[in-house]
Image (cartoon, rainbow, N blue to C red):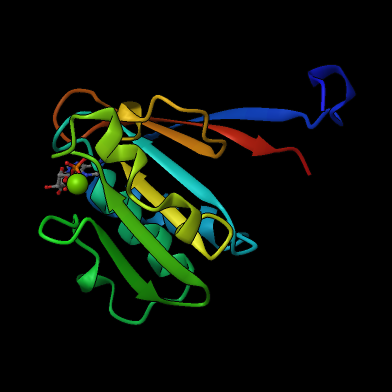
Length: 152
Ligand code: ADP
Ligand code: MG
C-alpha cells in the first residue's frame, strides 16, 4: 500500500513529570488499563531512567498478580508473564549487533500479546508502537514523553 492510501490515524504526544518510582509505576499502570492486548511499548532512556519500573506498571495495569517477577531479562532474552494478555518483556541492553536484535523472533511476539521493549532506541528497523522516552531530571524527577497514542 502506498503511504498516501493508508488511512490516516491521528497520533498524539503526551508529556508527564513524575517525582518518584511510585508515580512512574502508576502512570504506566493507568496507561495499560486501556490496552487491547497487542500493544508494542518501546521504552527509551539511559540506565536507571525507570524503564523497568515502567514495565512493572504496565504489567500491573494488565492485572499481573506478582509484579515482582518483572525484571530486566538478562540470561533469557525475553521474559514472558501471563497476565490479562501474555506480556513479552525484552531488554536490548546487551545486544549490540543489528542481526542479534533482528533474530529475536519478533514474529513470535508481535500480535501475540503486549510486547515491552527496553532500550528500544537500538532497534533500527521499523517497529510501530507506543514510544516512551524517559529523561532523568534532577534527583527523582523524570520527564516522560509518550507518543504514538491513537486519538480516541
Ligand atoms: P532502567 O530499567 O531504565 O535501567 P530501573 O527502572 O531499573 O531503570 O530503575 C530506575 C531507578 O530509578 C530505580 O532505582 C527507581 O527507584 C529510581 N527512581 C527514582 N525516581 C524515579 C522516578 N520518578 N521514576 C522511576 N524510577 C525512579
Ligand atoms: Mg531495565
